[in-house]
Image 1 (spheres, one colour):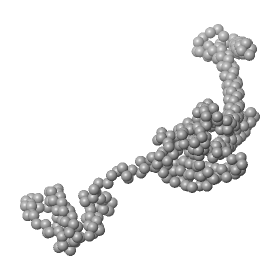
Image 2 (spheres, rainbow, N blue to C red):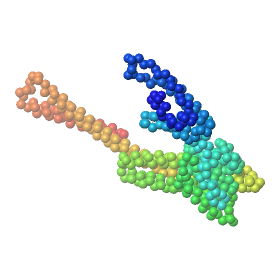
Image 3 (cartoon, rainbow, N blue to C red):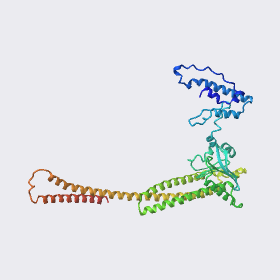
Image 4 (spheres, one colour):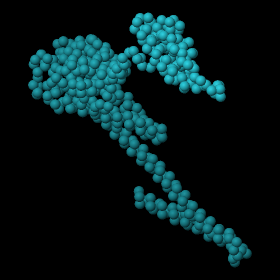
Length: 433
């Protein structure tokens, strides 16, 4: 584009009201030999000066109130150069606005500083459903340290199961449950980057039912009822996974006892890996519960209601919570023992299958040895026939019985060598067995 075309793109009313007419620059003297050639790059300095003057004039017009800011934005859009698709290119930074901070627009940083929580009170009622809270607010509200939130933040997936006791709360990270238990409420945590999962919804319903179904006469402190509800959900999830996985493995083992199939062996390998991962997961949960049972101070500190009422327990007075944890520890150990037995059966089946495959491999090797012995015997007859097949003169060409004698010698050598080889192989096998 040239300067005249650029000036015609500006509305006449705007030029009359706010933008002074740009003085016409003298035209460049073009020699007659270059009358048909024109270089656009010669006008780039003039275009930059005109663009700077136009921006300054628009700013003065906006400050005086002669031009609306919306008209300026539309004008900037219309006079923006076109991109390769024929549409206006993306606008650059606005010189009239201060640069916006990139910290507030970083959504990933905001996500890292928040947690999604579902809160239930002591009666099992949901007070907050999938609410988003700042991590700093959660730490200040529940008396936690920032490192404590890492144990209940579902963004960190590779975490060991743990039950942590703090001054005002109990932190639980078992399987899909990440919870914070206090004396009068339980807070369930979920990832802020993902919607509420089905397991999370089922867990909320189960907690509501179990927290409401306790009779007032035999009611335990709320923290124990909430912790027991979490342990019941964890053990129930482990038992359901165990039933499905063990059923599949046992059916496959029963099939392999009848016949060895290559596709079934591949399935056995996959189930063996799944069984090992499940066994390791159950062992980690057992270790987490066992670790709490070994700490008398943590067991006594789990009486949050009495601690809030100003009557903390002694370090050796924790019989109720110890009995509860031991009960679920026994259930987890039963699952571990059952899974270990199934894993032992899988390993035994793998050994038996390897023995069967080795036996089949040995049978193929014996067949190969027999064929080799037979080949050696036949090569003796071939050697004799080769000797007489040469074009050499001897005294047997005209003998009437030479053919039968040589043939008899060849067949005798073949049978003798074959019989000797098979007998030697049989003696070796008898020594091995």
